[in-house]
Image (cartoon, rainbow, N blue to C red; front, side):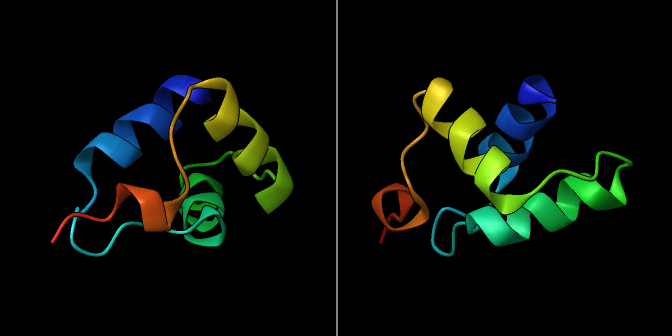
Length: 57
């Protein structure tokens, strides 16, 4: 699940990065129903910053 999360974040639009809620919904569509809190925990474990910090202008 962490690898999929990392891949989704790598492929996201950097001008409009995905929130933890949106990431949870994408994982749910792929067959991994996990909570937003769990996405946040995995994101932190992978040293991926929150959406507002990933935003590039």
